[in-house]
Length: 212
Image (cartoon, rainbow, N blue to C red; front, side, top):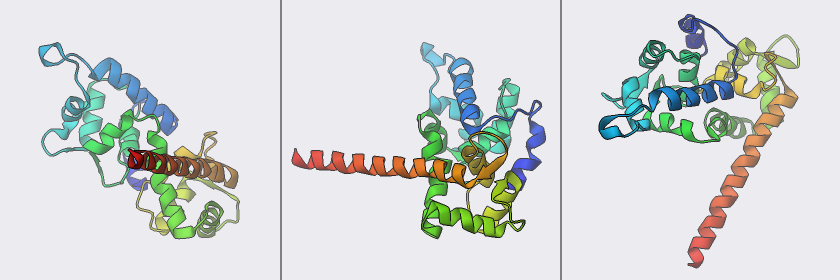
């Protein structure tokens, strides 16, 4: 989707270099103040109604065109196209009801695009360092850091199915447009620890339920 993101960059009238976390927070604030307006019988609209308003009512999916059109029409202050890329975790070109509902979770970034990337590198390379070194091998100028275009090209060459640009922005926490091994290791390491903690919590809950 890397090239697709670039092609859609012109859809945002005021381009701001926000991180995925900042874009997600901006949309959450916009959703509360602009989309959760009162609906029928004085009830506030929930995620389901908002999903339908954005174009998901007819087929259960929101396309990029539908999301961008709705948000631009309703004065969304962020980058609607970048938001779509962030929510489209499986990179299928559609935002499903499950993907849309996931934005309410505090750990959406860790359990969305970064978790998918973590599973990819651990399955294919076995370790964080091994993955980074393999990506660098695809990058031919010998530099020990990657810019977003290089990172995107390398992951596409490795047949990564997700959105490399979104992953890069999630990993590049200092927003200097460069990704080093230390940043790569720190970000993915946190995801691995969170994954282990979550699995441990599930096992603990299962043992507790088994004793009942």
